[in-house]
Length: 317
Ligand SMILES: C[S@@+](CC[C@H](N)C(=O)[O-])C[C@H]1O[C@@H](n2cnc3c(N)ncnc32)[C@H](O)[C@@H]1O
Image 1 (cartoon, rainbow, N blue to C red):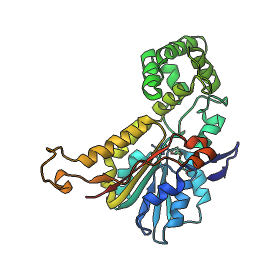
Image 2: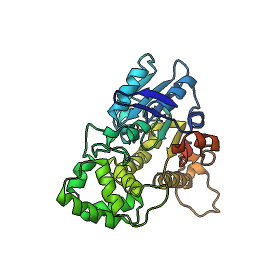
Image 3: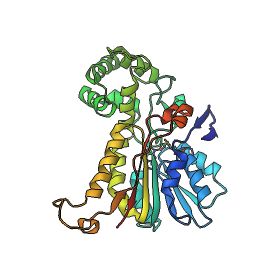
Image 4: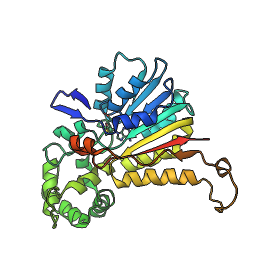
């Protein structure tokens, strides 16, 4: 758990699968590692604790607040450097640092951090009223309010259905179009009320706007595109023996990670009974162990960890 004070509100981020992820990542205490989702630095702190004086970490985050808090907290540790941007830029960043093919481990702990969710002014929460923003990177791109104001009904329905897996997406999109003609939709609670009113089957214990909010957030932040872009380049950035560790929080992410590792393990598809070695099938990455989920004790202490799944892979050629 990383406790960080923010200027506006006291917010914390509880790191998920902390020991398990770092244990899986570190194969060489002198190595160069990338934490692609720095957040509040929970994984990075543990990683630095396990590295030698020669080990190095590059911390990446889209969120300028995450980078600013990290630069302050770790100012004394010259083994750590920061990059504000997406992990989808990894290959370029590694090339600029002359680390392409030299990285000992890449860690991704996907999704949003607790400070992002809990600070009303970030606009992610349907429970706390704030401006409808939802951008992890507040320095660029369209806010959710700007997108909601300009997207057509089909696009809104597609985003809510595809990324939120919400079966009432079309009703919700039509309600958004109707309401925005009366009054601009600029607040999180305002949008949540519109979506909730369009949802005909409320479930106990779940806000009816939950899935739609997830869908809009994933779209605004290009979360699945960034993940796919990273997967397409990550093997070349790792050294042979280097590890990829990814923690996902919903099936849209985990499915992509799982499929990627499986496809890599299969290499070039040849008839099964041919006596061909992995290397001849072009296999460059293999999975390490099974998918790991948080222990019951972790879920009891941190409800946000309940949907986490961690997958580990290693570059072999
Ligand atoms: C779940 S939090 C990570 C928490 C971190 N492991 C810790 O222990 O504090 C996810 C973080 O990744 C960042 N993020 C999500 N997608 C990103 C991307 N494509 N590129 C860079 N950062 C991203 C978010 O801004 C957020 O700060």
